[in-house]
Image 1: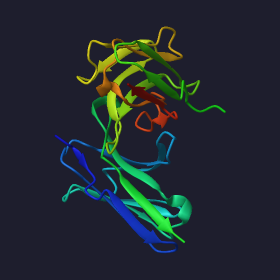
Image 2: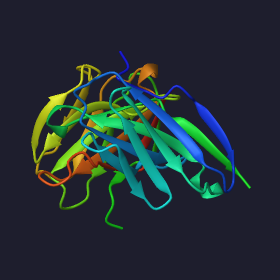
Image 3: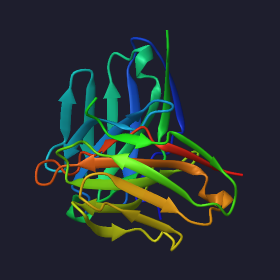
Length: 112
Length: 115
């Protein structure tokens, strides 16, 4: 039972354009969401988060949007850069903020 | 470097052997987590500690797996009688409670290959 779903395994974007990565969740108890970025041979690194009391959070080129009624969130990267090429994971913390439940990830490739 | 470190980075072992991995968290972090990641999947939770207490274990953690954090600092994850299905990347993460416990900081992982 996948509670956090990333249905696009990969995404290709040209440098300078917008990248939009999507994530759906099924557990309405989730009240916080995070995006992690992972380069090959490295562990995931925290990128940006959003609380369920907000519908948008922005940090530089990265913006996360949350649509609670649709149980959907998205990560926008504008403008995309080749260094953004990585696997992006959507995640949500469980009870007592103990564990993180991750999606399967979306591999983003930004070409020059 | 004050991030999370893991040792070894790679381990190749034969089926049936025991292996042990070490994780050193960010020094002020009191929570330490172990995850496993296989190809095409996101990290899956195995277990976590708050200080030296092991507070939760996933059903993924069979009785061949044991984890310790004896002094509330570094942690070890041991797999006994390894099986080919244990081949995966084992990730360690840490966080601070109270504060921002949901922001977990990951190490580079230990890639285990069981032949």
